[in-house]
Image 1 (cartoon, rainbow, N blue to C red):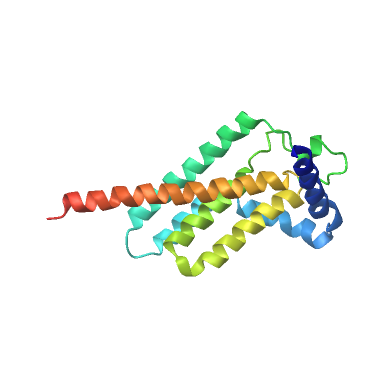
Image 2 (image 1 turned 90 degrees about the horizontal axis):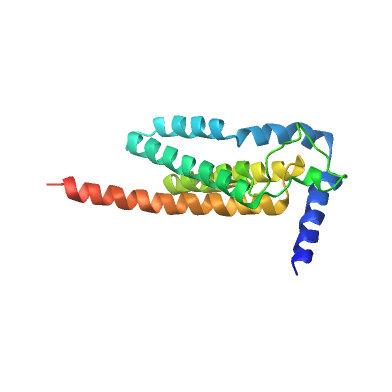
Amino acid sequence: MIEYFINLDADILRFINVIIKNSLLDYSMPVITYAGSFYLVILGGILCFFMVRRDKIYNISSFIIVMLTARYSYRFLKVFFARQRPMYSYDWVNIIGFPLQSYSFPSGHSTIAFTWAVFMALKYPKGRVYFLSAAFLVALSRVYMGVHYPSDVLAGAILGSFIALFCNYILEKIKESAVKRWSI
């Protein structure tokens, strides 16, 4: 059974990384990947919350807590699982950019992108389709560039979504408790 999923992972990787490869995607996917980098996401999120009139400090603080939780969670899991990147397992993988030396599972970019997307969707529900579409593109770019397996980005998407939902729930409960406590 596990061999089936390993082969499916490799087949999807081959389709995205080899079969649909073209010059337009070779140019655009690194740009999309860069948009999912930790510091750029943090900066974009903070700027977005500065434009909001209410709860700026709370939203920015919550956002930073959620994003740091995501970052340290995926870093811990990478070391725990120690999965090699696809380019070290298959000689047919097309690498766009530099070959990465760190571990593969889960995808850090996907974790960060989905943490951001779900958190922003909770704060701005009307934009959820855009946020989640952007996160999906970041995850797809990681497979296209040959640095992650599809299961790496799926795990990152699940992890990031869970972290955003869980942390937001906890932070909202803390906020409600503080408001009740300090209200007259």
